[in-house]
Length: 285
Ligand code: 28F
Image 1: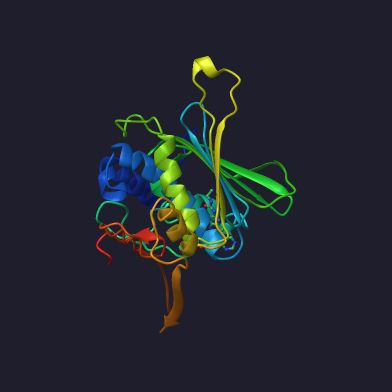
Image 2 (image 1 turned 90 degrees about the vertical axis):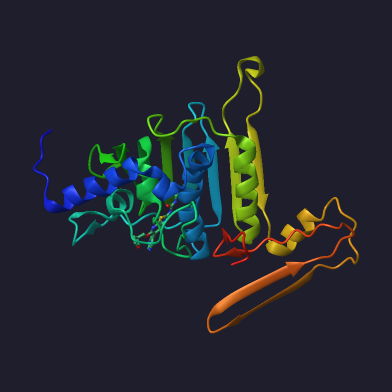
């Protein structure tokens, strides 16, 4: 279907083309690390909805074709037409490269409520991506291929829940490796749950190898009301602690909120993990 591209559409195509030309600039690398980073970008947007107080459960599935589905029970990305752009807010989130900070490798990512910042990057690097928004009793859906809009957001049915679902298949033209590793996702999603106390994150691996035809799918649930206190408990599980309690303090100054949890054990090596807005700061920055 030929359509005359306005300046905005050209800007959109150039933006996502830039991501496909230099993916490493946006997700750090196109190796296994970059492949798994796609999941974290989408889950981060659902976590932002949880941090905003509107979502308490996030479902992540590795599908049999190695596509990923992430479901949250938040408010749903707004479906209204964005006056300035003339397209739905959903389409803005998935097709316009947001200025909200660099991604991955050595850059920084501004999170904490900046919904959808990484969504357009994931879209550009996926053979296909489908977003479903359930809100006001309706189910809306839009599909993209390698970042290009296939059709406008449209109502596809009714729904009695609210939330956002994103499914995507990483582009094998971009990623050397397109097979997801369950254990890598377990590690990071468990950490995200520790860092977002009260949020339930469920991870399912729906790929079954031939021999285990009707085996139960692998599923893991992460839900920690105790947040980073429970994280320290988990990290010290197989250690000998020097005292029973976990030292915990929290506080804020000049609207900067800080939480600390620690417990000494009898090993010689120290494990100190620091995060800012849920993002690991390896140098403790
Ligand atoms: C499976 C991945 O991406 N969840 C999201 C929301 C909710 C809102 C939102 C997202 C663009 C710039 C506003 C709804 N109602 N899950 C997700 N849930 N984005 S992404 O807004 C993004 C708009 O700012 C939302 C009211 N405010 C925000």
